[in-house]
Length: 482
Image 1 (cartoon, rainbow, N blue to C red):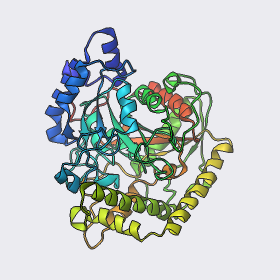
Image 2: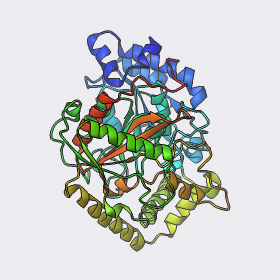
Image 3: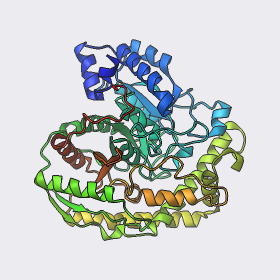
Image 4: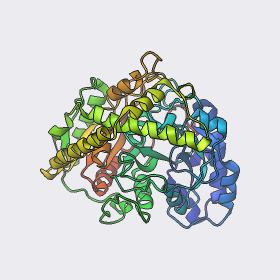
């Protein structure tokens, strides 16, 4: 039963519970067995919550769309009061730090009936597109254990791709849902800014880049998750416009004939795009044309803005400084250069050097960038198609920064991920779909971006693509089903 369950998405597992064919306790026990079997190879789960999950599953679970389905929460955001919470930081691990409050997102996910069986690995405060924190060690990609899972939701992606759980929490401040989805052959949808609550600790005025969702193997799971998280909490400073109807109802709906622009070159000029990634996007374009859509080489001219890297960097660096300062206060001692990776410390130091005027100027520049980019969608386009990444999953260690070049990893990350961060700056929704594996057996994702607030368009076309080019039967060498 354990192996069979590993092949089912969350919707199918919840249906087993609704029909009485499986109990939440059975689903949780099976997930725990899979984690215990696979985690020594992959290092995806860093905090076990097995006994608490068994207690939850035996209790009166909410009657939501995912009732009884086991999941994992990333160890960055989605905190649960009184439980371990470290964001990849060794000082928090050594201090045995526990979350003082439950995040709004965790409340929504638990109210859907999900049962959290543990927390997943993440890089230090989510700064890089790989999951290799010194505090917990690298998470390994189930498609090739010498390769990155991406980041910063790499632990969650490895867990879902290997069949440990059908869905797992991720967040995306520069691609951290879409990057690991591409690296691990999964569906990763970044919602619009304000679609998911970041409370009670922060909001999307102080933290305009990140959003939350689940990483999954099926479009219907992602759509259902979107419905779960889309209910705002009182006081949320940014609330995305309501969708026309539940996102789950968009699965299988006719998207009509869409006008889609295709971009395969690096708009930020941070490096070349690998031929495998270009070929996947071009192949996806042909598939979309076969489905009746009009695809043409076109993209927002405003995307060709190399200065965005530095504007984005100002906000990213300031966030690193604020994060280390806040966690230092939480554990009662300053976090120093000896406590973190050279890149983390260099980014925090750069953030401390940013003046308030420089920070506000960078935010204003990103706002202008967002308006300029959004105008392209108003000009008659429905979607933009790109590769998700500029390279296949790279070897572990690629983003390490030596002490004498502490920002080298940040610059290398810019070459790997030119297509995802612009849409955190604009706040638009985007989805990475698992398109193919290359000759080395590594997953290659393609990336669709919609206008702000139009996740409904993304879900309709993503489910259409999934039906025409299904990926459910594809699984990596390291998988619970063998």
